[in-house]
Amino acid sequence: MASIRELHEQLIKKERSAVEITQEALDKIQALEPKLHSFLHITAQQALDQARAVDAKIAAGEAISPLAGIPIGIKDNMCTKGIPTTCASRILENFVPPYESTVTQKLLDAGAVMVGKTNLDEFAMGSSTENSAYQVTANPWDLTRVPGGSSGGSAAAVAGGECVVSLGSDTGGSIRQPASFCGVVGMKPTYGLVSRYGLVAYASSLDQIGPFGRSVEDTAILLRAIAGYDAKDSTSLKVEIPDYAATLKPDLKARRKVRIGVITETFGEGLDSVVEAAVTKAIDQLQMLGAEIHIISCPRFRYGLPSYYIIAPSEASANLARYDGVKYGLRTPDADNLLSMYTRTRASGFGTEVKRRIMIGTYALSAGYYDAYYLKAQKVRTLIKQDFENAFKKVDVLVTPTAPTTAFKAGEKTTDPLSMYLNDLMTIPVNLAGLPGINVPCGFDDNGLPIGLQVIGNVLREDQILQVAYAYEQSTTWHLRQPELSY
Image (cartoon, rainbow, N blue to C red; front, side, top):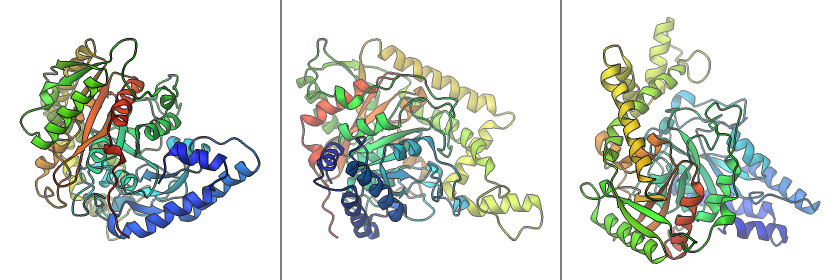
């Protein structure tokens, strides 16, 4: 499928209609879903209605936004009015929101065409999209492997060409890690840049909605559309939103050299040698493009993982307390009193990983353990943030591998939660500090699986990381490769 810019030009020149573009996406979804399982809900009729509205605007001579008529997938933890929002959980199996999330409302206003709600790890808890209560999404590059998680459905849908762009949410790497596994661009914005109103909460101080695309430019266009202040979100930032795509240039030769820091703590033990070689080569390429490379130490970087797995489950245990069978969602019918209804509903409605994290979080917050675990984790979080602040006094952006390995086989890590958690080693510290980060493809391993480079920016410097990612992307051909899917 073509890029946003190419499709927009085809639409305004009347070379193709929005209905034709949408139907092409729906046909591909129908053909590929038996293999990929990227979508939990396909909204074909609504998508065609939205496309007809765009075509009517064009026929009337009205101007349309860059996203008008563009097929997009939405992770199924963002509320969509009148359309099921399940968070891939049995406890929300029949939940249909009575309101629209801010991000999806912005996309509707822009004329974007939502083709469906994508699969995820239940309540966004996981790194492989194997924790969904409904189906396991496959990686388009190798159907026996996982697409990453928790936004695996959104990443796989873009990589497989089922939609042009998609939205995911990132709590500890849930956009960037699946983007790395699926060979697409995925971005986590600065915390507060994109409204969380209507995003079903996992860990409120970490969650952030962000875009997936097959190119940096497409990602930049989608980011601009969803970013901005929202009075409905108390953590939303009142800042001016630039035209991110308009400032992209194919090199890094500005008046002052871009200073790129390589975080030493992200190399060495635990990093696959093929991934390390590809990322090192990418750093050399950035230097050739005009960047100034610095070796940077963030001493507490690797403490991000244990800190996260105390803070995030603690917030989850509070956020998920609302699913009790009383107000909405699943309610177990065979209960003889209120306490029995609570316990049986939650026992049957939540999956194994969600229960595990609720238990960890409840324990960390309990009397006698709060200071020893949760409070200490928050102190470490502050130290990690300070490391980043010190690093950005010396450099403009930081680079790391996005994930320690390429995509692993489905079922390989399901019985070993700690091994699964290590997949987020490189991405978690960015969430803890509230910084923006982006994945850009930087190579393939011997099995033909994508490798990702992570570019991290200072607060609200999305423009810088997009520029570095774009310059690198345009100097290579990795982003032009597409999985060979037969249907």
